[in-house]
Amino acid sequence: MNINLPHQVRLALYIITGVLSPVMVYLLATEVIGTLEMALWTAEVTFVSGLAAINVKE
Image (cartoon, rainbow, N blue to C red; front, side, top):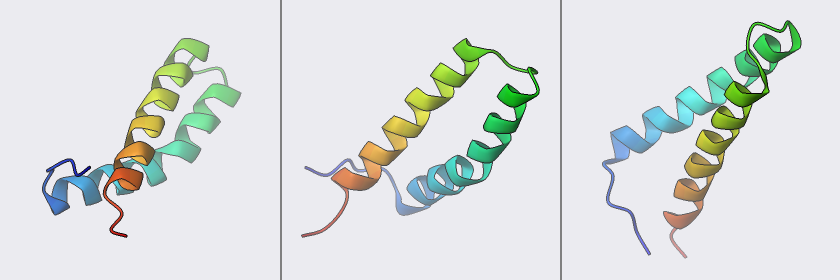
C-alpha cells in the first residue's frame, strides 16, 4: 500500500513530529498543556509513524 502524499509533505510531517515531540513533553511536564492535548499529539505521532511504515519500499 502506498499513500500518495508528495515527498516534501511527508518530509515536513516527519520533521515537525521529530522537533515538536520533546516540546510537547516539556509542555505537559510544566502543565502548560493537559493530557487531552497530549493524547491528540500522540494520535498525530501514530499517524505519521504509520505513514512512514506504509511508504517503506520492500
